[in-house]
Image (cartoon, rainbow, N blue to C red; front, side, top):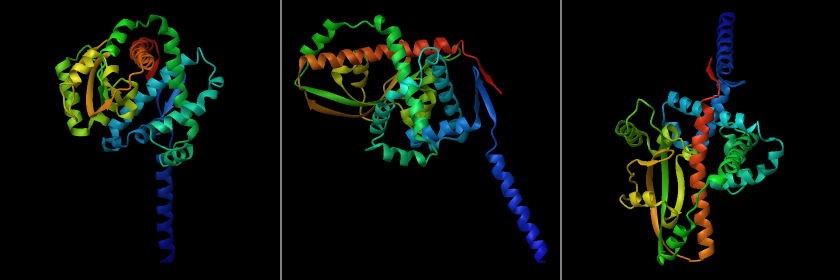
Length: 308
C-alpha cells in the first residue's frame, strides 16, 4: 500500500514538472528582419503594456496577445532603422533622464518605487530603459529628418495670443488615431471602435485601434489649454460634454477621436514670449507626429516580417 501511494505521488510530481516545462517552452512566433521573436518576448511586451494600462487585463487573452505582437513589431521596425544611424551604447547617457520622465508620468516618486512596481510584472529596469531609448532616438531621428519641413504660421500664433481672454479653459483629453484599410469605410470603422469603447472602455480601445504613440498609455494626452489646440479640434471639443467623444476628425495621419475627460477654467498668465514659445513647440510636435507616422508606414512596407 505504501509503495502504491509513493508511485502515485511520483507520477503527480513528474506530471507537474512536465507541465511546468511545457509552459516555459520557448516557441518562435515570427521574425522581423534578422531578429527572432518568441512567445517569451510577447509575454514580456504583454506585461509591459498591462503595467502601463491595467485595464488591459479585462480584454480576452487572444486580443492582448495580438496587441502585444503589434507593439513589438512597431518597436522592432523603429530599432532596425535606428541601428543604421545611432550608436545605442553612446545613447545610454540619456537613460537616467528618460527614466525620470517616465516614472513621473506614471505618478511614481522615484526610481525605487518604479522598480518595485515593475517587479510585479516580471520586468527589469534595463528593459524599460531600452524601450525609452528607442522611442527617444526615434523622435530625435524624425526631428532631424523633417525639422526643415515644418511650417509655423507665427503671425497666426501671435494674433491668437493677443486675442487671448483673461480666463482660459483647459481640457483633459484622450485620443484614438486610426487609419482606414482599403476595404474599410469610415462609418463602419467608427461604429466598430465606438462599440468596442462601450464594451471594453476607451483605454483598451486605444490599445487596440490607435496608431498614435499615446496608445500604450490608453490614449491619454493629459491637460492642454484651449489656445494650444488646433482650431478644428477645439471646435469639435466644444460640442461635447465631459466623458463624451468627438466624431472622427480627419487629419493627415488618419482619423482622430477625442475623449473629453475633464475641463477647468484657469486665470491666464499672459507672458507673451513664454506663451508664444509654448505654442510654437506644440505646433512643431503636432507636425512631427504626423511626419513620424507617415515615415513609419513607409519603411514598414520594406521590412521583412514572417510568421513561423
